[in-house]
Length: 133
Image 1: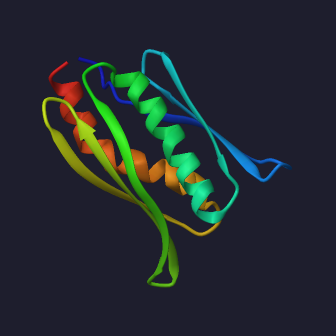
Image 2: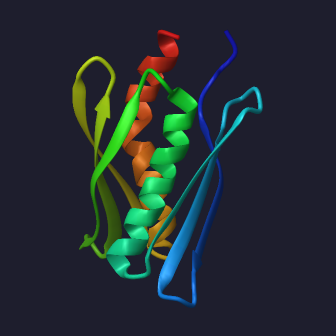
């Protein structure tokens, strides 16, 4: 079986003039299938992180639907060890709910870090999903 895994292909983030923001995350399978997640949110530190994390969750759900669903429980940027770490908490549901936590170390782009933290949280679960597919 060729290596099949979901790849982080594109990330887009805009702060809009009306005080809102927009995020887009594109994930791809090795065979070229694309899954795009988008979200609009409030332009604030917390709102921007949440918007980007939700866009990543939306793209993930398209890729693994209908077997897995995800819910973003929380996202936060914290300073630790002289760096910014974006942490997300997710609930994943297949037959039963599982709580997942992911993180991403970032200095220059916390919104992108929020999307990557979602992928970090779901990495092992997706690996198991692909192994049984």
